[in-house]
Image (cartoon, rainbow, N blue to C red; front, side):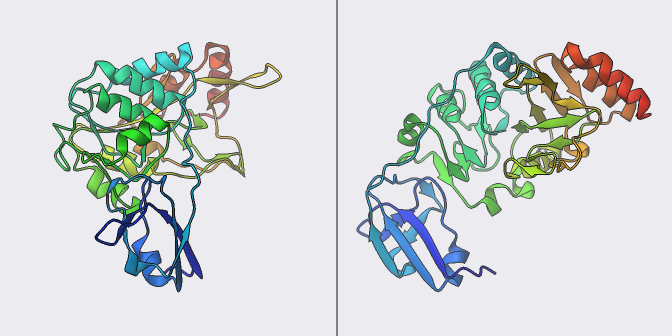
Length: 321
């Protein structure tokens, strides 16, 4: 149970039925029920987005009026590496598939590569600017979805003003709590569910670290493991991790994101058993039903060329094969 003293949430002005809408996310009805003091920040800039986002006036104890702008951001520029990775991922995803995308340049590049696809559906934790582009281009119409057909299903919205305008009072966009959207049992019912995420580093057997750099916390777990679980149990589904093979530090030093072993202390966000394909700008590494030797070979093949010999030697020393 929740043990909050105060639950603070935002909402748009009440309609004639006494309802406000949380807008770009979903309120926690459990928290509202179990928290002694519920305060609603009433903001005219918060848009109406449908789904499980409504808040009735009887649910709140205090209303505080404010007029702060909605935080938005524009997607960053894409590099040639990003675009190549996007094209590699797109080659794995069939027309009619239901997709989930993470945040960042790689997922944005994947979405751009999807513009040649047909009849995609979207079931995702985070609704992003690139997803709005896919819907507006007629690519993601949800016509093949087996659950929530013709609707974009998400947990929250974050991105550009164009995205905010797209989701506002759009009957085809529905937001639901993470406990619902990220439920693997629900996700696996989508038609050809494809979970597409990125990470910080991967080891040669396919273990994925997405939230820490060594023991230092870098980001949250997010829903990528949930969507991957759903995808691998979905007929025709695919669990995909995509990332640039190497990163260049400020001093010009290049580091491989494919490691013989994860950096000591790193949290394994996704088990190697939950991955079907790992993708870099150098190709696609199939992982499902592969032996350890095959996994190591496939991972070295998509590593940056500067590190392949070193990774091979380290694999021999560790007796991975």
